[in-house]
Structures are given as structure tokens and as C-alpha cells.
Image (cartoon, rainbow, N blue to C red; front, side, top):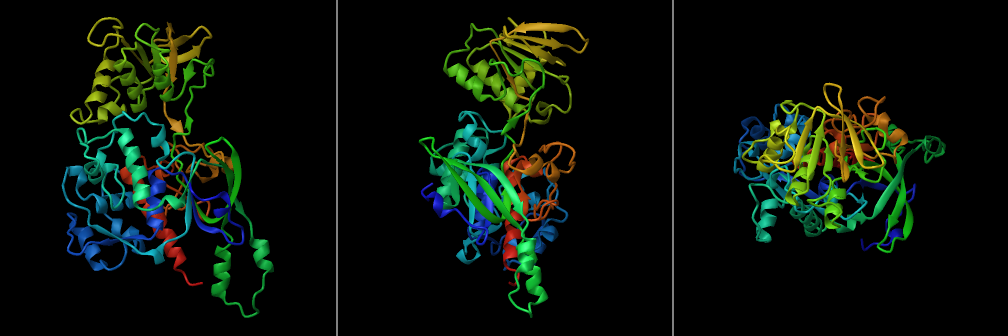
Length: 490
């Protein structure tokens, strides 16, 4: 970030319109839409959905961000429960679920007068959690579903003279694409890297505003506007530079968008010994152990707990280096809820291979998957100092295994420690922690504004949108809401 700290410090009297916490795909897309890039329907474009096409034709001269998103999205169906996500996805990638080759019906025009000043705060460089993913990992989604508006991932790959493997790509390519996107769209001045937010507080300015009397003839319209000015947030934290020096910052903003994702706080089993040094909760620990040669083909097995795609990635990584693996998970192998039962074999051959390995339950040495043992319907009971793990199987019998290291990869929750109550008061169920899958933040589906806190928005996994192709709909909804609020008469 080239700006000095003083360049983006703001005061309560002159707050920024928008601060975005999180610089992954959601934050990048939001910055693009708030920087004056405006979506219109292309002249002569024909959308394959005839009902949507008629709606688009009726208001082709009006930017999508100024239209009624609820009206446009009515009747749309797809792989997301968010109507705004479905709308933006089908405008950007018409017919994509049927492998259609229909071009986007949107054209983008840079209109600086529509730009809204904003900052995007991220712990690392632009790209969010993609900075922490092993670069050689193959993405779950198709490469063209990872693209952002007005620069498709395929076009970027062609620029780099690269090919997309089986319609998918590596995490490294995705990260490079997002960082190129920020520079190509000239968004970098909006991004502050190395920024750690530790407090977001809504200020109560009602008493101060009530005391101000600009005129005895103040209109009711002005009174309404003053009421809206009470939505001021104080965003505090620190910035860590390359030398490790921390600088505190305090920014005031009328609107705060939560775009932090869910990868900050890995879920734990909550059992004895889980805090021992050989027990880890991130796949990066295995990557580091392999590089340092702390685990190898003659080591005790690596224990991997979990039955999701991150656990599968860890198994594939260990298998690549011939490192023995014990794989334990609570579900039955044929459980329909297992993600492997929902992935087409042709498109995801490596995950299908893991699924086949999981079915081989009895043989550890020898057999088609030598060096791998599957333990379905097993619950970890405890870990011991001597690197031994105790399990209980479905019959209640206890089993002990010696391991070299343990990876507990059972999902993660967002880290919202900078919010009061860790954000629980914003969730659908205010008695439980925020969880992207089980208890997301309660939002208006067409603005993504938190129903419990005016001026606070949530996008991406926090709002229940998991895939990059759908988080962009949240960015559309937020930018539309903010842009429309800016146009209200003063």
C-alpha cells in the first residue's frame, strides 16, 4: 500500500462512506462496483431466460445497480438460495450450469461520478484466504466460475498463455488473477494490506444531533437525513508493515461491510490433548512438515480427521509424497451428505479417488491403496503426549494408533471477535455463534444489510454464499443499496 497511515485516517465529523473488512473475492468485487464501474445491458444482447430478457429490455438504459433487484431476480432458479446471487451470476454467465457458451449480457462503463470513496482492509495482500492455500491445489469450482466482472478468468489465462485443466485451475493461478484484477482495474489505492481490525463500534450520536439547531425552520426532510447520519461506525485496529512494526489506526465510516470469509477460526473437536504440539487444524501444517522432512514414507502415519474437501486435499498431498495416512471420520462412507457423493466423477477424478480410498476400510498395508487406512464412524476420544490417539468406533470399542502428526480438518467458523458478542446478535439464531452453514448472519436478501444493525452489511460465506460465482451477487446488492442511498436528496 503506497498511502501513508495519515492518508486514510478519518474523523467522526467526516466519515468515509464505506469500509470493507476483508479483501478476498467479495471485497475485490465490491471495490470494483464502488469505484464507478457501472453495469448496463449490452445493446442487442439476448438472455436465454425469456422472462428476464423482457425485464432487461424494459430498462436497458438504466444501470443494473439502480434497478429493482427483487423484480429482476423474481422466478430465477439455480444452485444458490440467494436471489441476488442468482441474478448477477446469470447476467455474467448465462446458461453456465448447462455448459452454455452464452456471453455476458452486461457491458461495463467507468463513470467516475458514481464512485463512492471506500477502503478495503485485509490482513494480507488482495486475495483473502487464497493467499493461504497451497498454490498447486486444484480448485473445486470451474475456472470460469472464479472470474470477476469485466475480465473473465479464461481471458486472463489466455493472456498468460496458460491452459485450464479439466475446466478447473490451480489456487495459485486464481490468486494471481485476483491480484492482477486489482491492478488492472486500478483499485489498488482502495486496498490496505496488513490491516488487522480488532474493534467495530457503532457510535450513538443521537444526543449530539439533538443539540444541533441549524435553523428554526428545519424541514422534516432534513430531520430524516440527520437521523440517518447517526449511523457512524468506529473501525479500529493496527497495520503491520514489512519490518513488523505496528501502527494503530482509527477510521470512521457510515457503512461497514463484513467480507471476512470463514477460514480464520478452524473448528475443534474439544477433546483432551487437542492443544498438544503434534495436533494441528490447518492443512498448511502438513505442507510445512513435508518441506521440512518431518514426515516421510518411513514415518508413523499422519492422522487426518474429517470428511470434507480440505481433508481430501490433505490425503492427496500425503499420498503424493508416499506418506502413510490414517483417515478418521464420523459419517458412514455411503452417507448421502458426504460431499464426495455430490461431485461428478468426470470433473473431479482426484476427489473420486479419495472416496474410493475411503471405502477400503480394512487394509492398511498392501491392497490398491497401500499406506492408507480408512476409519469410518470413528470418534476421537483423546490425544496423548506420546503421539497416540484413542478412538471409539460405532460399536463402542476403543482403538489406539501411534501417529507422527494429526490434522483436524472439520471446517471453520468466521472470526468476528472485533464485533460485540462476536457477532452473535447479528445471526439468524442469536443464541448461537455465527456459522456460514448452520447460522449465517441475518440479512436483507436484496441489500445484504444486517437486519439487526443498520449500516452494517455482510457478504460471502458470512451471509451463506460459499462459492465465488455467487458471492458477487452480494457485492451487487450492497453496492446497489449504498449507491441508491447516496442519491437520496440532502
